Image (tube, rainbow, N blue to C red; front, side, top):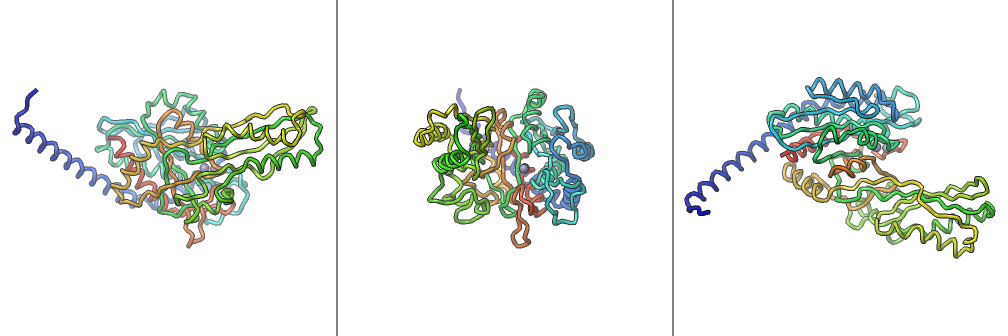
Length: 426
Ligand SMILES: [Zn+2]
Ligand SMILES: [Zn+2]
């Protein structure tokens, strides 16, 4: 095919006009996302406090589901509740064709008797939103509202997945097994968790956000004394654990330390194997069992764990007593799609300025999220959202008795992730 020069110039000119028009539309949308988020913020705080006052345990999220349904219907979204448990999906169809993107929020609270240092205390004795899922649901509703108001410019469909039973690791699996992704074809999935980082921060890294979690069981003939079993367990533990320069990655307060915490490239949280302090030792039917939870950052080293344990048993002359060493449990972990992670960072940087996203270099021990099950089926990114305000004494340490959240993180989350979804739909 031949083109003359003039023809090419005209084409280039048209293209550049259309690109700059698109950029202008984009800028306008993100400006509107900002304003819209600010205008609904106080109402979102009320919604969060309502969730906080009425927390529900895994598989009991009935009232929570009803509240979400009411909000979604008011926004004009289609809702689907017949998937799994008290899960609910809100469907927002843009005016134009595009991709299908899902945003996931978890719904359940925790059994927690600790005092609640807020005015909007939990009304249910022994149950508390001390993992921040009240905030996650609120952010999802906020994004739904902001994007619904910009529906005319939206290219594609957004699925807001409100997932029950995260704490028991049943909800994501349940929704997937009951046809969530055969019903809705989802191209990409996103979600977040509040973390003890400062409010205003968004942390993310490609690949693993948490260490691999393995539960190991050693089965022996029951001929060891209690003392011998304890001693063996200690030797096994000592031979397994690994940390950078003798650091203590099991001390979670170090997560936010600027020198050794998650955001420093030299973090102590990128190379470790942590074992629980006390292994479970018990006997049953003439057998002795030693069990422990292990957290390993490096997938390549997982294969060394069982041989290391066997070696210690051999060195301690218990080979004749050894019956087996095996993994009894192990969940998939959150692993971000590297390409999507990088393009998400680029999108957020270009709209909100470099520095909106903080690079995360480590994996958070003892934690995980069943968002991992979605990522096994759909490429996705899971973000950490800073929820602490150290000056105000608010520390968003998940599952801790003093857990608190600076609600300003709702504004950060709604604004940033509405923009991200809008751009990723294109
Ligand atoms: Zn939790
Ligand atoms: Zn959680």
